[in-house]
Length: 373
Image (cartoon, rainbow, N blue to C red; front, side, top):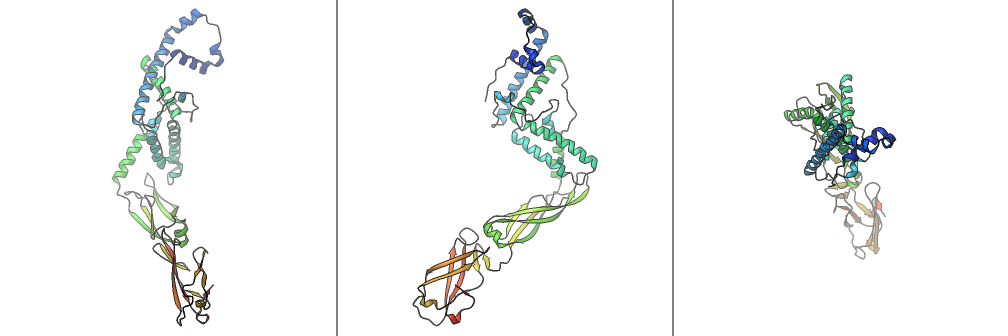
């Protein structure tokens, strides 16, 4: 953690430069007048304010560090560019409903939760006045998040507010405050409503997709109508497209839950949509667990008993062809009946360790039907 020393005269010079620019360095005051001015009640009051605000910031940094191990204050925080031009009269902690020593994660979580209610995309079904109100609140939430989510900006904001508080305590003033949104009431109401409502029910939706998506991976887009209920009890509906990602080698059925993203209800939490995905029947192959089996029997043309080597092409999924070549196990073995060859090719199935299997019949030319060369 960086340690910051306090220099009241330096701080006063910085404030003077900010207010007066080059005029702050113009000569015109004698050494005696300068010493007199430094000891004036005005300068003594400024130094007291600086000292008290520095003490407050030191205490604040220590408390933040105790509750947030990721907090690493730096001296350069106070000279870094602001991520947002904040209004120090606004209590952004109150806007987000968090403690002044909240961690960055707590600030992010609070902003996300409130955005689910006040984001413009979430105001479907509200009146024009309600949408305008939500829009203003969301702008305030966004300003609060941009100020507090950036550590240097947050420390500059805290320091400016500590200075105003110190001046008020020493001079008997009231700190300037603006009328604003208080998220603590909203968060408490949302929590109470969520606790009071019945748990969401699971709505199972069965869908099918091509077998290739289970083999190579892919997604299935599903359009469903979703009923909505606003905070004021107004009913509406929307078309929602759910993207169901199917990973390569997924089991069947593959289940994917969209928690509380279904129909909304007045007395219960939104439904959970459970998609159960199976594969459509495939023209060439049939799935059996993690294996693929070619549906039709492969017939090898010609009298393969007289050929020392055997070769054939086997169709698979997505136009894939498997070339098989090797020593003919039936070479030199006479026989009147056709020979059957059962082949299992590991690693060519759906799941890891799955196989592609098929049956090949080795016969004479007269026996050949649907020959494969």
